[in-house]
Amino acid sequence: IVMTQSPDSLAVSLGERATINCKSSQSVLHSSNNKNYLAWYQQKPGQPPKLLIYWAFTRESGVPDRFSGSGSGTDFTLTISSLQAEDVAVYYCQQYYSSRTFGQGTKLEIK
Amino acid sequence: EVQLLESGGGLVQPGGSLRLSCAASGFTFSTYAMSWVRQAPGKGLEWVSGTSGSGDSTYHADPVKGRFTISRDNSKNTVNLQMNGLRAEDTAVYYCAKLSSGINSPFDHWGQGTLVTVSS
Image 1 (cartoon, rainbow over the protein chains, first blue to last red):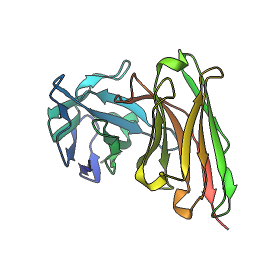
Image 2: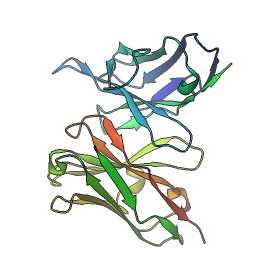
Image 3: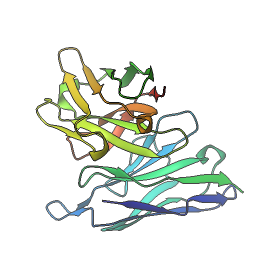
């Protein structure tokens, strides 16, 4: 399964909304449990990735509620409702429906 | 607190071998699937290999099949990656990652990574 993110980079003003899209080459929705096998990670420079969202919209414990995930099937979105300075990072989507593949990453910067 | 500590990285010549280890603590190790994920310099994330909690099932990405072998020792809380026939394109930071539950689940904890450089 190929994961394609858009855009590759994004500059947003502090306090504004940031939206990152992720499209899979085939559906990652499992019919047996109606769950989308899709996660979002945040990676800051020099650090390992950090899990933000899983099952497409479930926020990991401790992740601020300004981060939200949406979508189903093949099209997904990560939204940061009000950008903070500490959100500058590269964001990756990942499917774990069949093996596991990551999107190419979206670099988020402050405008 | 979950901790994952990788070791074994370094400089190796093309065609050479290296064995990475990941020491885990802070959770019931044998209950969780584990994986290795790599990141080439300045590039994105690539899943490499995975193993079930028992170690009975293992999985490898196509680029490393036949060259890399993942294994785990649940008595020592370690997961290893034996890398043979190394190529320049295997140069990357290798992360040990814990899955949140079974083999089809996200990576909820990551180590700091160990750098593997394949060069003559």
